[in-house]
Length: 205
Ligand code: MLT
Image (tube, rainbow, N blue to C red; front, side, top):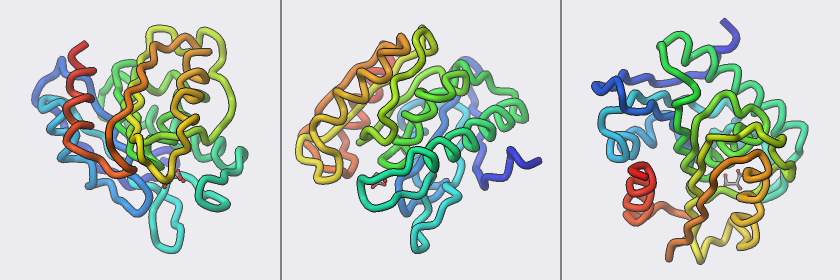
């Protein structure tokens, strides 16, 4: 089963109407990193959490980069399709509806959540992108994200994400018809309690 080749954790949710969450960790993380965040954001949800399959000197990621903030579009595209195929196979296996799946991604995980929305909109219903940036400067195809939503939570003093990236990424997603909210927090690249509060509030809307 090549499409289930990612290592992953799956937790069945106790609440069948709660939307399933796809948890995507940051560089150097594992499939266990965001489980607590997932429980806190939506306690009843099923959690699907793959482990990045690219190693950068031992630090796991979802795609390789040429340097910090420098990306190869062919590599990003290839890895995005691989993760998308995994998502379709894993949601089928665990009887989840991908159109209800909400990606919760941090840093590198947020970046691949964005490229999933840009390139493979059928794999997600929504995304909470924590500290994302533009890695693929390509608008989503017109109409491909109609009915889908994204929340971009970024920090005002983040040394990794240039300040023009969140609004630019929002435009790339809006080009596909997504409803996108960009929210800036007094924060650096790391997550803060405000991220949890803001993400929970957005999930209620
Ligand atoms: C990336 O490479 O995806 C971004 O620079 C975020 C990171 O992993 O630090």
